[in-house]
Length: 97
Image (cartoon, rainbow, N blue to C red; front, top):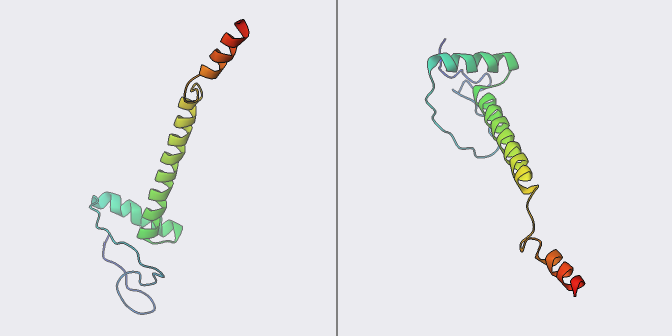
């Protein structure tokens, strides 16, 4: 499978030329077999290689953020506010007097 960029159907320019805002372009090294899979999946979805990779990265980072938030919530379940339970201890001590 060729990894050259297709010509834009309207202008004949190489690559996608319809950006509406500035975007960063990056170079990523991938094995040919993986790139073939990416291109096939993009074709199945009717999208571009870049759009597919953006979707995959966004989904992965969203999952990571969700897992991190869940883990923080789990860790904080047994936590007490700053000072621990000092106020409760003080109230109990005062009641004893």
